[in-house]
Amino acid sequence: MPPRKRPVASGSPRRAESAVPSDALGGFLNYLKAECGLAANTVAAYRRDLTRFLAWYPEHGPARLQDVELALFTQYLADLRESGLAVSTQGRHLVSIKMFFRYLMLEGVVRESVVDLLNGPKLWEQLPKVLSPEKVDALLAAPDWEDRFPRRDRAILTMLYATGCRATEVCTMTLRDVRLEEGFCRCLGKGNKERLVSLNPVAVQRVREYLEHERAKLGATSDDAPLFLSGRGRRISRLFVWKLVKRSALRAGVSRSVSPHTLRHSFATHMLAGGAEIRALQELMGHASIRTTQIYTHVDHSRLKSIHEQCHPRG
Image (tube, rainbow, N blue to C red; front, top):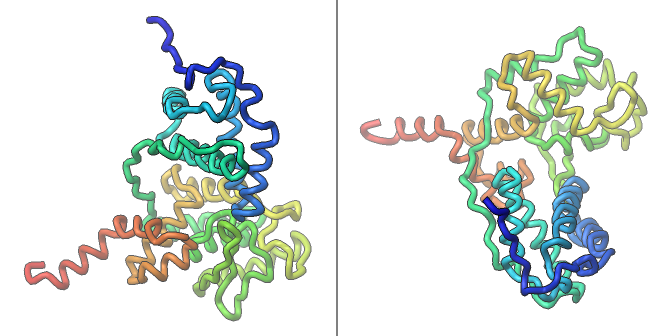
């Protein structure tokens, strides 16, 4: 079978090395950080996506960005699909390109962004993976006393589940952010948005035990010092938290697909099952849109079944 021919937008020659200004990507990333206030991890994702697109562009795109047509972007999505990327990842790449071309419009590099006419690949709504309360308890108790810092590890796992915080939010907490006497902690979420989250008695106890028995051995104890430190006295990373959750899940006999975000999903689902209002849950989770929070209403079947049995005359 002859190789598939790739269309070139608007019949322009394949000499696109100078089509995209050399400083455009750097300017765009600075724009995301300074103007949009996006988190470093989000900016890094945009960088990866656009680096791939800009490496692909010279062979397929026109010499002038003004001559770009919609067919170029549909071809790029087709190539991403053929490379085996998940549908959700393809959609993220498209969002990155749309944001980049909107920035180029603001800078006057292009007159219009034709890529905005392109819809992302269809996504089947995937319900998040959730652990039962019993499995959560087993996972939180997995670090044992033979570990180097078992109280720290238990405190980290408990904070992930008790607060519904993202792994990055737990990593960046400082000693000042945790108010054990008042029973709450301060979280710095996406876009540097702050929120306060209550701490239940178990979380307060786990963190207090860590502070009393292990924290002083690891590093500085000033108010602005990180709450959780590695054995070398450095702020823990997302990778550290990911490995901790994986190791604890293996010990507890929980599915290997568990991640720090699984504890966040479990927190949200169990909160709804306990009667929490969805607007309150939105604030606790730090979701910008309630549509993101509403996915958990599809997970909590037990609460709906209970309400049906109590209220329906034939329940």
